[in-house]
Length: 222
Image 1 (cartoon, rainbow, N blue to C red):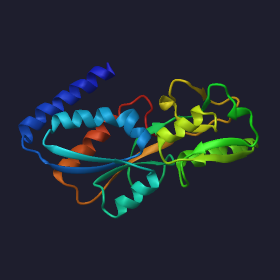
Image 2 (cartoon, one colour):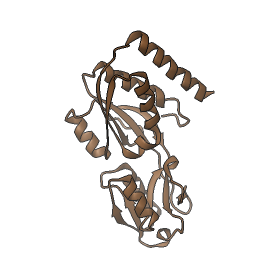
Image 3 (cartoon, helix red, strand yellow):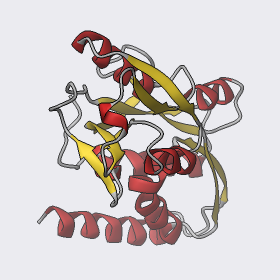
Image 4 (tube, helix red, strand yellow):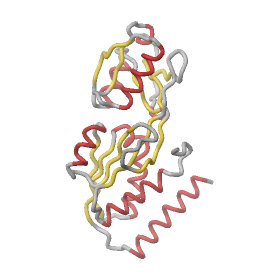
């Protein structure tokens, strides 16, 4: 029923947009982490684009650190960032991600000590989660491959160069997903939405659309 309800809400958005803001136009600049853009955000943006066809979206995928820096320089209207759960920082929590370990199917890297890791440059929430969990479990590790691109990181993992951390739903076919044993459990991370001020009318519509579209998923934000 949830899927049907979401479709009805999207249809309601289209109707109300035509009635209340038929000429809504402008440019909205949005920053987002690459993995979240490919996993969840594409459908959200697609429905917004169909509802407001005269609004031009400018979407940039990058690391959270760079997105935050650019946001504070007013480069973006809206930014989605990864952060610790229940953070007291600004922004509205819109998503929670369960994380898993991902390795090549042959498990070659899993057996090495220190265990090689394929991670994004510091500071990175996934990187912090991985190293802290391994330290707590007493497992030696080393950074074998650092890459800011998800495609590059996955290629390294496929090649057996190391183990990485991904959202559970992003673990691709052909790779081995380890959810806990034999590696330590990973705490979830949070996706938060930052809004620049003042926001244009189209940016406000996108902000509200993102919040409403993501708030009904099966992992409620706490």
